[in-house]
Length: 117
Image (cartoon, rainbow, N blue to C red; front, side, top):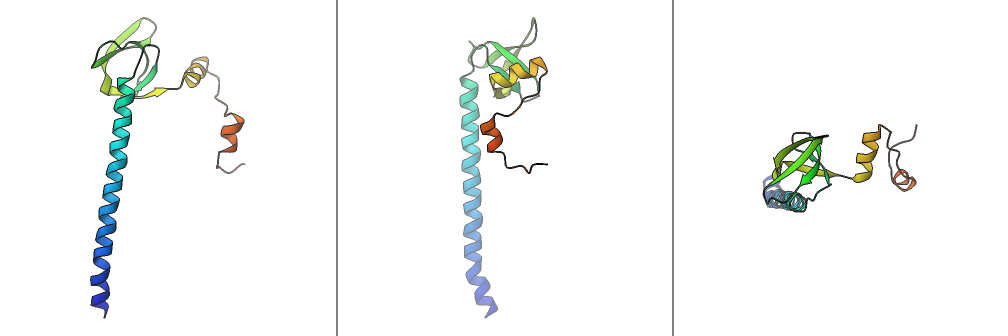
């Protein structure tokens, strides 16, 4: 009796495993497509983070495969578009430069599920 139960359970377990692999692959492909779209839509003035952790401002995005980033006043370096990990929201970049702490808006604070102390 125990053998027939395990034989019936095995295909269900195998099907669940295949479904998990399929769904995780779809999620990863979607993230890769979103990153490639962001990299192709970079324009001058965008503040970006690179995969190596460097933050800079795009000063020239006219080439198809590379961009020029200003990483300090007067210091411009050339990077492959693929090295850009993400863009930085303009408000956060301005707050980081001033050294002021970023306070969440009341709407963000209301959605925060962390316990209050």
